[in-house]
Each structure stands twice: as C-alpha cells, then as structure tokens.
Picture (spheres, rainbow, N blue to C red):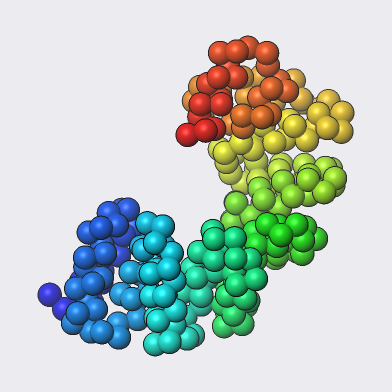
Length: 233
C-alpha cells in the first residue's frame, strides 16, 4: 500500500476517533517518508489530543518546517496553545494562519476565543462577528457572539443574534435557555411563557438549557437534577 492510501486510511480512523490505530498508520508513513508533512502534522495532533502536548507540539512545529504555508497546521497549533492557556502563542499562530488565508474562518473564530480568554472582550466580539460574516452558517460563532454581547451588557443585541441562530439552527445546544435568561435580565416578557414551556417539554430529550439557567424557570428538583446531569456529562 502506498503512502497516499495509508494516509487516507489513517485520516479515516482519526475522524472515527480511533486514535491509537491512526497513530500507528501515521508512524508507518513516516518510516517510509520521513518528511511526510501530513503524517507528521496529524501525528502531532493525536499526541496533543491524548494530552502529550510536548510531543504533539514538537511534531506539529516539525511539520511546519517542512511546509510553513499550511494554515490548518498553524490553526491546530494555536488551538493546543489555547488549551494550555498560552494565550500569546495561540494568538500568534492564529494570526500567522490568517496571514496565509485571511478568510480562514476557523482561525478568525479561534482568535475570538483567545481574546475572550484574556478578557479583551471588544476585540473578541470583532473576531466573532468577522467569523459570522466569513461563514454565515457557522453556528458556534453566532452563539458565542451573542453570549459575549450578553456578558458585556448588550442584551438586546445578544437577543438579536440568539434569535438569528434559532432561525438557522433551532436545535443548537442551550440556545432557548440563553434566550430566556437574556429576556429575564431585561424584563422582556413577550413570548417568554411559550419559550419556558418549550424548555420544560424538552428537558429530558435534548440540551436545551444549562445547569445554571434551569434554576430561573423551575423549582422542580427532578427537572433541575436531570439538566445538571446532562450538563455535567
């Protein structure tokens, strides 16, 4: 089997989360082609996924010495620095990725996450908004943008984007609970009772409200416990 076929097989296993099996294949490819960019890069990703960050980051950086124009690898490296709370390093990698592809939505969105993590909320909002413009179907960007708008006190603006997401992807996790919380915070009663009833009807079927917001809408211990269990999982 040639390295292209092996790589395809490794990526398939990787996507299925069969990490150890994918790792073996990536290592096999590297034994055949010691400078195979993708195999080294993806092997590094697996090591990081398995929390061996030192080995993983070293491998991804090695892959970037082979191909320093790969913005996906730079974005992955940024993600692992972000997990390690190495925020300046994460921001640097995301910006390098965007220098190579200014429309790379993942890096735009991840810069929003990085700036939010260091409490630079206005900059984070700019990047979340850019991610939405870059990909109007990027649902997670809508939710995080709205949630951060709410956090900085722009609740009416937040509701606008929560409702936009409700229109695009009504089953998005915790969305209806966030809408109800926002409306309660500004005493907006329109359609509130209907939304609360919708939450109560779906508590046992899907992630519709988080463990903190459920306390606002019901004093049923059974319902609270069910939501808390799902949220903690």
